[in-house]
Length: 114
Length: 116
Image (cartoon, rainbow over all chains, first blue to last red; front, side, top):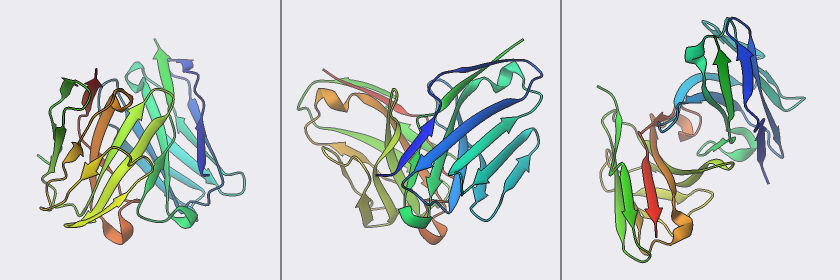
């Protein structure tokens, strides 16, 4: 079955450093990959979408890469700030999984320390 | 303000007592879905709807029902709740172009359900 893996351990980094989060997937060939941010007790909020034919996407301090050969996406936050502390979810859709459903990973918690 | 609303936000109930969680969106979205979120398991899709009167099962539909009689509303029904349905539930909507799954999803604030 389709499986998405995100590091279950929290990522702790110092303010100003670059945070890098990983999303690996198996038994799936998605056409789209999305990243969401979720704060405690709140619904996820969309951050970025990248298509299978795109290698990299940027938005302000955020950068996403999508390697369909490695079946992996990396999510980078440059110049991180304490306000970036949250759980980050990756989600896949399209391709072999169909275009009607979005499959989420369990998320990685990021803590940025002053 | 564009938003997805859910009610109630918190609910404690007992086994077997039917309940409905409402979801409404004001963005004229065609695609709506329900997820449950459990620690370590992430968001799992329960049901989705691509338009009025069109619904389909997600990955964990057992024990749940949905209906889509109006475009803006997508209620989640638990006919006979059990303790294993204790979870955090999210409703989401998206424009629904070409399937809906790959659109940006707009999530509601969540409903924390406890079944005793």
